[in-house]
View 1 (cartoon, rainbow, N blue to C red):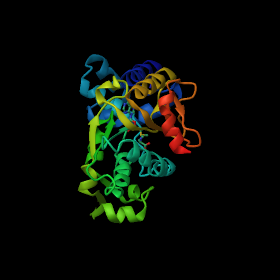
View 2: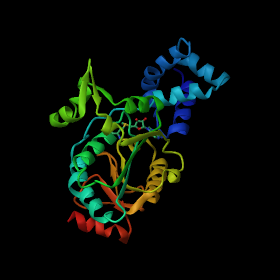
View 3: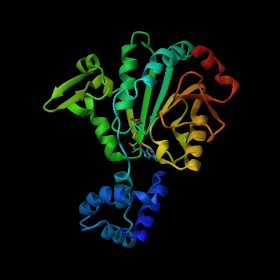
View 4: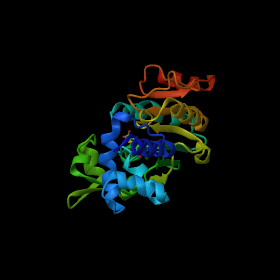
Length: 281
Ligand SMILES: C[S@@+](CC[C@H](N)C(=O)[O-])C[C@H]1O[C@@H](n2cnc3c(N)ncnc32)[C@H](O)[C@@H]1O
């Protein structure tokens, strides 16, 4: 692949998704886009690039951008954030939302669904306390293909062996051939929607909890700042934002701050966030 082709394709991907491909990622572009080239009846990525120049079909653009997303995910990823959700954030919400009886959670960049389904299983384990409550889990991703997989709620043996405790596997999954199907009740707790984090986040409404894990790492600093500022606007004054282990708000935005002693959780950088911090103590 020559420099022009690399520049054309990497600029398109960055402009449409925020994903940054540095020049050393030529091999990645080539290997991920070769199947797209074949799908579009082209012999090589160079031919795909020429097709894009002559006929920038929106479906072709979508295929190219989606092929460059990394969809790695697993149930209860890194464990600790989910333990903290159970022991810190959920008790906080049960107390502070007792009058409204409503909780809104957003799994931004949910990939194949393991993150929102992990949250749904935790919430289902507290269904007696949440009886009569309106609990919404909105799960979004840029990739429509990965959202189809998420909605189906079917996982391979390998996928259910990664992070999912055996008792939850037995309780919430049924084996169908070589796949494991998640329980219909858990599936129905999650609303999956396509959504690009580069868009205005305002249309999604206000959230008590946002999980935005392992996606900002792929963005440049200005894009990270724009997304985090947007998330701060959509997060309740006492809300909690979860980022991935390699992600932070520090040096990127002053609208959010880490929750002391709870790595990976961020709160509003305003006095309104104090009750949440006190609850953590
Ligand atoms: C590595 S997965 C993270 C999944 C999950 N949050 C986790 O931590 O396991 C990253 C996801 O971000 C999505 N993504 C990438 N760019 C995006 C964008 N601009 N808007 C929304 N989702 C995006 C990808 O499609 C991919 O599914």
